[in-house]
Amino acid sequence: MMKSQDVVLLLKLAALERQAHASAGEVPGEPPDDLDAAIADIHEALEEEAGNARPLKLNLEFDPYSVRGLSSAIGISKSEVSNALGRCYANGLAKPNRHGSGPAVNRRGLEEFLSYGIRFVFPAQTLGLARGIPTGLTAPIFQGILRSAGEHFPVWPDPHGDTLGLAVEPLYKTVTTAIRDDETLYKLLAVVDSIRLGQPRERKLAITQLHKLLNY
Image (cartoon, rainbow, N blue to C red):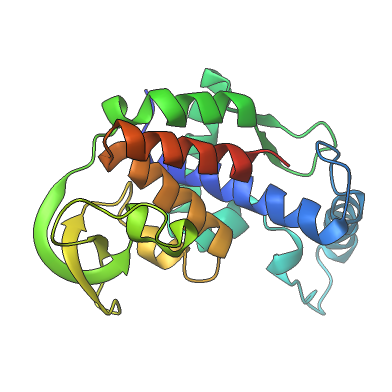
């Protein structure tokens, strides 16, 4: 059974993959060899340093696909990251990377599920007026292409947000924390909310943006 945090995890993985490909300038679909090598070196160093009195200083930024790294990035426990990955492996939306560097997203399958299934499995819930972070069609990714029909714009409730709007329950409670250091994840989650919230014309626009974000 899929849970909403599984979707957030899959989107985080997709964001990491997109960022890695963009920074490495690689052909789409090819894994980032430099990142794979860095992760392999870290694991090798950890094995060599095991039991050594001098601790190894490890920068987790070099292993963003690890359970610990994913847990820190999206704000769910390590055990729940493991459980979520297990569910995603079982339903085919993710698989272990063939190079052993971490999980890889089935981007085509994820795009299909988000485009046509997520609004039925995880329908959007509105909660009244609140201050928060713009989502849906009012998020920066849409740049005013198509305005929301309502008087108030959709927002994720957040004490640090500066936009007054119609509160929308995020896919998972940690979403507003997870996006703070990840612009790509913010774009993906806002697009998904447009699909969950929107009318047919709005969903069509959001699905087009989703396709662009997941094809790299």
